[in-house]
Every structure is written in C-alpha cells, then in structure tokens.
Image (cartoon, rainbow, N blue to C red; front, side):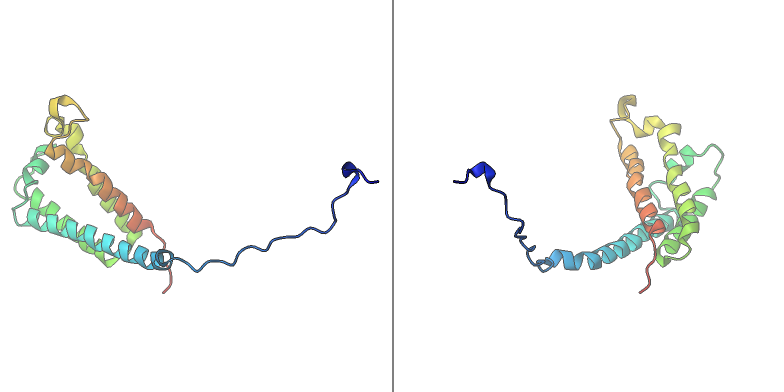
Length: 163
C-alpha cells in the first residue's frame, strides 16, 4: 500500500501557454500620433504667445509694460519695452521654426526666469498681505511662467527622429 506522503510528483509539468497578445487598443495605436501632434501644438502655441505678447510690447499696447518698467533696476526710457517686445517676437518665431533649439533654450529660459524678478523686486505687487501663498493677479501672471518654462524645456530638448 502506498501512503500519500510517499507519492512523488510527476516529472512532466504542464505549462500553460500565454494568451495571445491582444490587439492594441485604439488609444495605444493613436498615442504616438497624438504625441507628435501635441508637441507641434505646444510649439506653435508657446511660440504664438511669445509673438503675440511681443507685438503688444513693440506697439506700446501691452498691459504688462508698466510692470516691466517697475521691475527694471535702471531707467528704461522709452526704448526698453519695445525692444523687449521685438526680442519676444524673435524668440517666438524661432521656437515655431524648430531650428537650433540648443541655442534657443538658454535665451527662452533666461527670459522666462527674468520674469520671476517681480516676485523678488516688487513682492507687494505679487502677493497679498506679504503672504507668498496669496497671489495677486500679477503674481498669478508671473507664476504661470513655470508652465511656460517647462514647455520650453520639453520642446527644446526633445530628440529629433528621422521621418
């Protein structure tokens, strides 16, 4: 008589084959195209914002012109805001072209980081009751540049692929 503890398992094991790979879901098939489309929209959108804001400064109709003047540590005369506007137009057009991105990133980054001077130089304009958590409209206008800076980094550092 054989006791169950004396039974040895069969040396032959059955392996269940993996299920066949499911067809990619619609989103998975579209994702690469959507990603390319999104990068293009981001490039044109961010570049367009730079051109738009730059034109307003260049023609003297920017609502941010006085803020720019207030933050500068030197007398801006009547030339600085329009010159800044032209620089923004060039940066925006350059971004839209997608050319020489390694050179563009320091220029865009420097410009966008410069906007944070408002928080340091004129905090009364950026914060209510001297509380950095209570942003004024000017504070919100400046802080949103974190997103613009992140977009600039994404767009100017992405690898180009053939095709």
